[in-house]
Image (cartoon, rainbow, N blue to C red; front, side):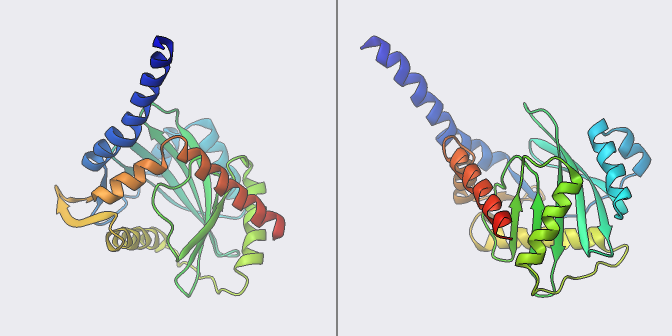
Length: 246
């Protein structure tokens, strides 16, 4: 019986920390800007501080016909995101190359393609190994392929999916100089959406928005084992099925 207790107690502690202590920490520490405003960083200095993978992908994106827009950073509660924006006038497609530095995790680099449409919807394809923490939003749709690390292959997949699922939508061409503002506007709209659905409190504290109890619980729980594994597998299967049927 003692042996069983030695197994049960650590498991209970593990789940208590994840499902009860975790939301409390997220509730008090997770912050969102009242208004997203990105500072454009010096491109040469920015690239000097990035790793070889990021720099190699930067060159590959430029050689694929995308125009370099600029680079910036986003500092969050327990992580920092460094990213560069590129745009293809021919494809009316935005590419974001980003590297994330999070506490207790090795930095990882990912690619995301985004297209915005006249009806206000947004379509995205990325190779992020982690699914989004926030809930689904009706104006956003997209697919995730974490096993695809080749830029050209991911671009081909993106064009194929857009051709199959967004062919009846008119993409918006972004004017040079407005790309970062477009991203800021979208992120600000997303924060307002999170307020409307009760994930984020409309009250500002310390110049930032904070999660509600509901938001902290749901955000944390979906990132806990085993829920995280189920959601991750379901998202990848959905993406693979969409590509097969495209």
